[in-house]
Amino acid sequence: MSWLKTPKQVFFVKSDEQNPCPICGSLLKVIGSRRRCYFQDNGERRVLMIRRLRCSSCNRIHHELPDLLVPYKRYESQSIEAAVTGSAALTVAADEATISRWKQWFSDMAGYFAGVLISIATRYNKSVEGVSALPQSSLQRIWHFVGDAPRWLARVVRPVANANYWVQTRSAFMSG
Ligand SMILES: [Zn+2]
Image (cartoon, rainbow, N blue to C red):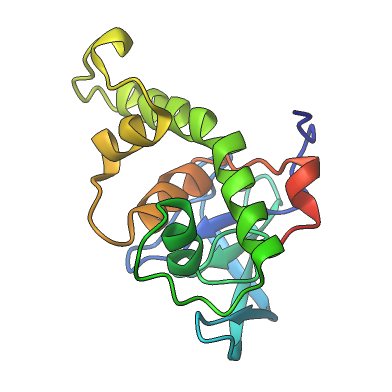
């Protein structure tokens, strides 16, 4: 797997509290907005306006990412989550090729996501058992931190994107 050295854009997931710059922690100023299209699981296209923000200190541009989206993915995170877990309730109106790209993307990324969640938990001094004590599979490790209740993928995206750890694989770059 090849990683891009620097992500093209930095996202952070919007929440009610005022988020600091994911890179340097300074204040962000709203400098505009842009359209972000996505598909609901029924295949209906939606457009959101996403705020563009500039850091008052390092000048990096950030984009708010609503909870229901995954960076660079055109479908809601719930649709991707259903495909990844092979949920029987999968009703997403995406073609087979798109669904198998999601599965491949997640299987490529799962170990990385688990590692980031461990590192974030460690950084905030939450007690983390030894890695060997954690479940074996990457998905189980991820669920150890975010739980396996519905919308778990959104709960992975939030800390990873907000800590500026979001990376994009080349293979996933053209995927939906
Ligand atoms: Zn900054």
